[in-house]
Amino acid sequence: MEINELKISGSWLITHKKFDDSRGFFYESFKSESLESALKRKFTVVQANTSVSKKGAVRGIHYALVPPSQAKYVQCLQGEVRDFVIDIRKGSGTFGEYDFIDLKSDHPQAVFIEEGLAHAFVALSDDALVAYLVSAPYNPEREKAINPLDMDLNIDWVLPELHISEKDKIAPSLKEAESLGLLPEFDECKKFINSISF
Image (tube, rainbow, N blue to C red):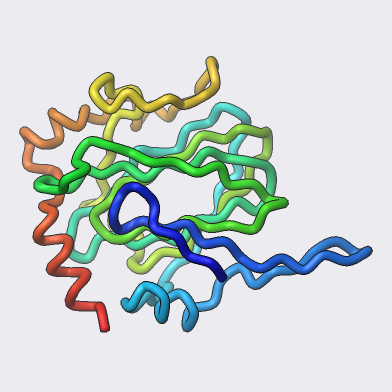
């Protein structure tokens, strides 16, 4: 695999080696030892999530409180999505900024997002199938959201017609979440990452 850090520290694009033949193609979609060796940290998968989304569906902006939060390994296994990493860590040099990558099922890539960062994607095709491997189980008391239409974040969702859940529509803006004390601290995130690094 080839691993390249994205603009937001703590997020990486993983490109897998693809083997094509007359039957189709094959690739190793996840290899714990290789990922941990490259990132110099532990990533124990405790839950796997799958979503299927129609074109224009927005999932996010979601994050979990630190510790333990959730590290995520995200892949698109059918169709295409634009995947976003949003830096919501107070004290980070890129606080309030985001980066994105288009994940496509015929181009084997994944995005790894460490604890403390927020994540979202928009489906660019119908029946977009996304699989997430996560390092901590779902905990509704620690799961939080930022409104995907937050004017300060000003995320370009690409498509003119979006489908957003009612829960995400009423989520606070980044500034509101900050004023409510709902955002992770950059130093606390790094302290936690260091505790599982080697």
